[in-house]
Length: 150
Image 1 (cartoon, rainbow, N blue to C red):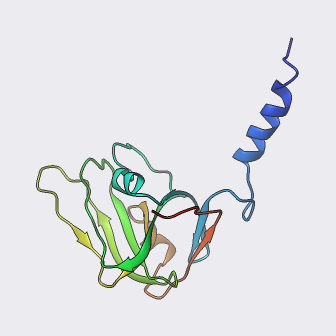
Image 2 (cartoon, rainbow, N blue to C red; image 1 turned 60 degrees about the vertical axis):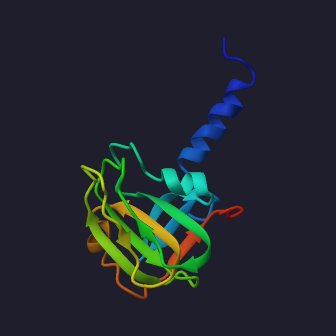
């Protein structure tokens, strides 16, 4: 016998899994391509990023949000999958890209810096930026609540 609270819970879960654009589910849109997104808005989540993951779905991303624009540099320590790292300014315009960045195999890990100050950094599966035709000046649209940035 089904518990009385189980049916509404299952409907809620199913609705979240099939969330439409603009429904509040975290996502970003770049070059007319929508990616579900995880937001990294504080130091611990930005430091951990995509470490220790063995896969990243082609339609998934991680958006790192900083409180202000500054030169940014990322590394791939403990990151097991190759990535595209895209840097965006305060107006969410693409200012720099590091493409097909390989996992770091040994210390010291190289840094992958932005060419200009950036406030937002988007990580995608390697090859995605080329596949969608991303280019400098493209606007990043953010769907969902980023929440407080610390």
